[in-house]
Amino acid sequence: MAQHPSPGAADSSDSGRAAPPPRTGAPAGDELSEALREVLTLTQLARATLSERLSMPLTNVEAVEHVAMATGAGDPIGPVELSRRLGVTSAAGTQSVNRLVTEGHLTRAPHPHDRRRQVLDVTDSGFAHVMGELAPLLRLLHQAGEGLDEGERAAARRYLNNVAEAYRTYLTSGDEQA
Image 1: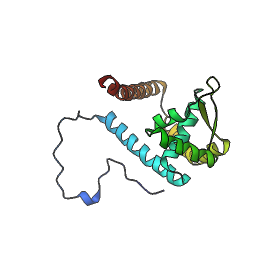
Image 2: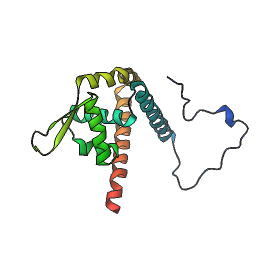
Image 3: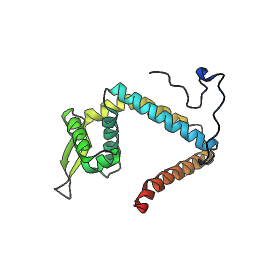
Image 4: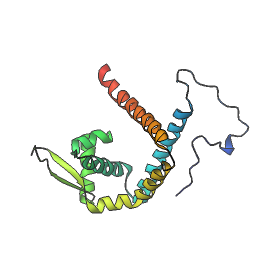
């Protein structure tokens, strides 16, 4: 895996340059928001690396992830919802689903309550393919929280829940303005 510098790490090619003036209009960051930004940036880099290691386009990796997570939560999704979650048109989503079904990563079946709709599921081989590359990262993420006591875990959980709520608020705020 290519070594990616930490987003906040100094680049030696920048030495000798004056720092740009701070921009106005953006809220000032704090240590938590800066750490979150670094995690989000590294998450994007890890997703690109996962895509590369799996020899799959990133959209297809994300599609398999969305289908697996929804199915695991007991709320399977169909091609239309998958397209929405991927942020692509239904035609592009259908192409991805067709390709993933042909490659043996996903299956399509009639919705159990509405036969006009379909639900998607990840095949055992598709799950094994993705998890074979993803499992080491998931183990490292699990280990990241092992040394925290219950108070620290509760604080981290509360912060992450607040971050998730901020994202949900942002995602739905455009609906109110439309």
